Length: 338
Length: 242
Image (cartoon, rainbow over all chains, first blue to last red; front, side, top):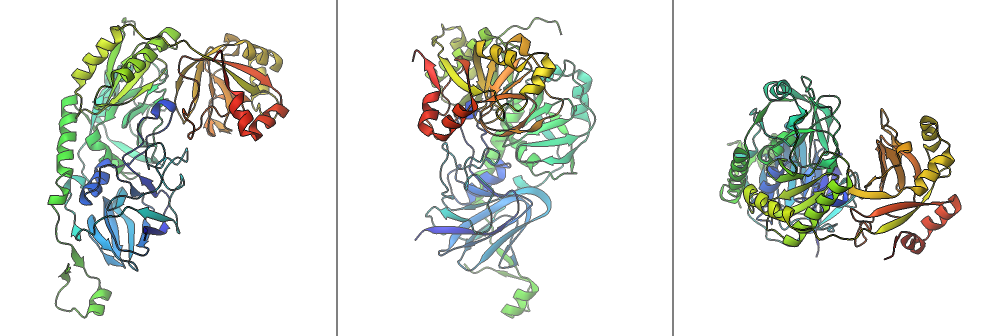
């Protein structure tokens, strides 16, 4: 029997994403992929999945799902979302067995903008140009090229029912540390004072923040040589300064080419943490060298690979109703028998 | 800045992309060097090169630093650049375009702004030979150089509502064919019924970078005919001389 995860409800912005669509940027096709690659990779590691296995990306709009006929082993991680199974609170990141009849819900909390829900083996929505990632603007990939909604049934790969566990992933914790930036390729379009302002001042994420780009407000970043360049390639994390003199950081759904000067790029190790910012939150940027960027990425990658070795017992944080139901009055928690 | 810049330049776009820049202008000779390096890299098949994106004047090389170090990649590219390029003869594609209402939404406005009649604009369009410089911005958006100087018009101060797929747009000395509906700061002067981009076709674009594009005027009846028949649509976009 086919294993199926059903969407009972989804806020705007829930999509299927794998590691991204590779090889078609030359035709203008956006790579897409997860906004927070570290959280996405942590879910894959927790499920012992291939790194590119497709998962659900959940926005602050939240999600509610169940397993249709057969139990499914799922895992989730990302921002500090409120996860519940049949109303019972779960850790912020965990691997669980979702039995038919149980409902798993995710609601955004105070911190973080994106969370990932994966299943052992991955979701088996159709491959499109070699990828399952959804690009909403061009309606390519994912589930019919669109956001997930109530009634959608997602086919899941066959896979083992791994034990339930809480994930200990401190590398996903929010942090006030400046976002590290590798300058270039058009940093020579900005005067030294402009670069000083960018790397010295505080910026605020504006409400203009989506999968394509995050617009920041702060002190104006003046161009030394105008702001029109002949279009060139655009990589993940590019910090583009257009005529409004404000940083626009290009994210997973960026266009593959663009015509504004790019002061630098947020390094790969920090792009997920940047994606987790919510509008109104403030941040700083710090210039780093290529060696620092590579070392940070290698260190993050090494940490993510420890996910399966760092599993913690899943502790059921019982609610009052559950306590009454279970007639447990001598303790607030109960180690889940598994 | 008046400092002479020596090309090619190697520039970092984050720790996973190297930009090899051959110039800062729209120039067929510059674009030809981009295409040559792109082809040479494809032939070389370097481990760790994930994908390449040719643009007007530079090649972006997306690579995996865990598989190839920047220094090794730069060395390999430097060797490829000085090798003689395998030159592919450009093909010339004839693209049917309708300049009549309702397919030419901004043509009257453009004519007024350039001080030309719509007939003069269409005549210049029919005489022009464009070069495909790159695909970008959105899936299948084909960027063209070779706009007749008389048709040079600035971008709009603010984007206009989305143009339909197949729209022929001009602005800033360039032309482009839009493949999917998007808002644009350019001006829509006509529309082609042929699918210049099809995700499910192999290859998904027909004209390669460096190829030539000429536009053949069609009337509204022919536009409707071509857009209603897949077979007619597929055969309408043809390269001269195979």
